[in-house]
Length: 160
Image 1 (cartoon, rainbow, N blue to C red):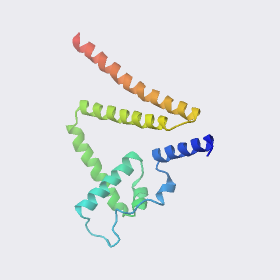
Image 2: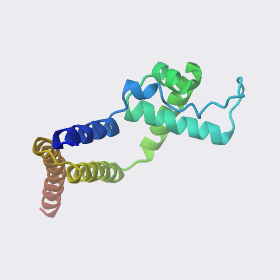
Image 3: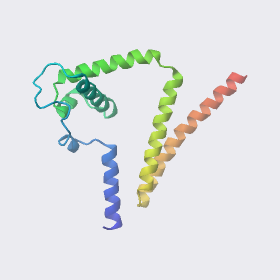
Image 4: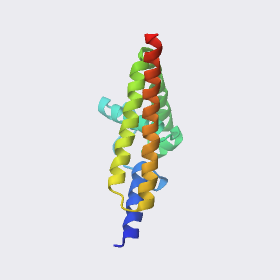
């Protein structure tokens, strides 16, 4: 395999890892709905598994309830109820959340993004792809540095 083909393959794999494309939807596992289920209540394990997946698809990928219901082959009203419950849970937890824990969560997300980009950079051979990934890493590091600078300014203000 030539270097160009190898680079294209790696870029394609990276793109697939970062995106949940419509072509993946056709092959999406329907493990959330048992074959014998014709309605009625879900078991706690099935319900928790379904809600976790609804949360991921709705908040991480931005899918609508209609799209999620088609994808998971579950009634749209069930998905709407799950999303409503997720928002209510987030709202009640939001009131208990401190600004420090929100910032820590945000920083952890940014650092995780940086780790994924570093892994992609290590697995990339083509110069143009490396350059694009390095640019993204620089943007992530810039976010981290901005946070550190703001944090330093607050400490200075408190000392005055």
